[in-house]
Length: 273
DNA sequence: ACCCAGGGGCAAG
DNA sequence: CTTGCCCATGGG
Image (cartoon, rainbow, N blue to C red; front, side, top):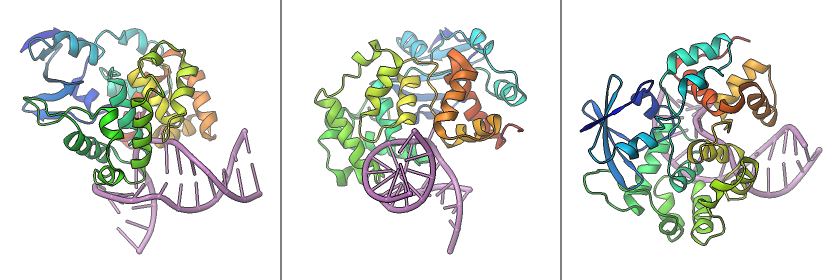
């Protein structure tokens, strides 16, 4: 294992915050796939011990270059946001592979995180490619999912999400949307393009922009964030809450929300209104 | 038994 | 442009 400098980083917290769902504990370390590469990572203080040869890959995936102190300087100063920052210091927004991120969050609707993980692992085992040294297979390609039967997808626990994932996979596989070219579009255009995919609405599209396209101002509003924002703002419909979040939290609103999300879930608390 | 989960789509007001 | 309801499925 070689060592990468990782100040202001909390690996366990980052992996537990509902961004990725396929990492496995391995002693004091974690084992997972970054794209198709198996990586073992272990945090010891400010040093991240990584599988030799994977230093740059891991540093980029875990976004060790994000300027956390500058990001924290933009955090709101109310008591709940302060508590979230204290509780989540070192949590970073991971740079995920785009298709994997889109497909995983497409299956996330009305599911608890433990089940999102179960669906991801089932899809990988059934339609992905085995990776040497990893118990977890690579995430299935768009073509692999597009070619799967709906019944086989439902057998992975997808339920009503099965036809949506299949149709979106077909669109990606046939070039109906170019996920790489989307990186060059501005955020509103990229959001609109993602929302045209079956099973993808504003919440999931914003997750993909935040976790797959480095749009750190993207604000996915799920049931947890909605509760937090309603307590701060005093009610409001989803569209109003999203606008409130963007206006209040600024250019790192996605980071702020991720901290609020994780803190609300773990502490079972909401802002005092 | 009952409620909820990192929602989306569609029809009806 | 909003609201109501359904869509499967597992966990608390």
